[in-house]
Length: 82
Image (cartoon, rainbow, N blue to C red; front, side, top):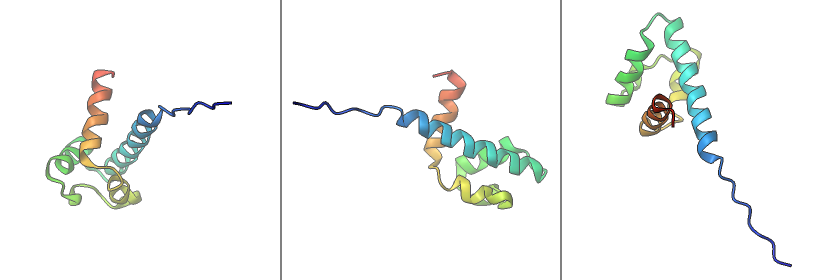
């Protein structure tokens, strides 16, 4: 009896949710410290300089878990509703 392989196709959705959660936590940490979260995250994405992200609440550690191009990809897909 032949068994078919089951393909798990939700990996993109899992990645997207993980990136969204990280961005949300980083955003909140920046806001709590009195920074402009959007400006700081844009600065980080465009330059790669981690000093744009506070270490408060491990935000810097969190954002390092995601590649910058993945951040842009998830944000663009969310913006476009894709």
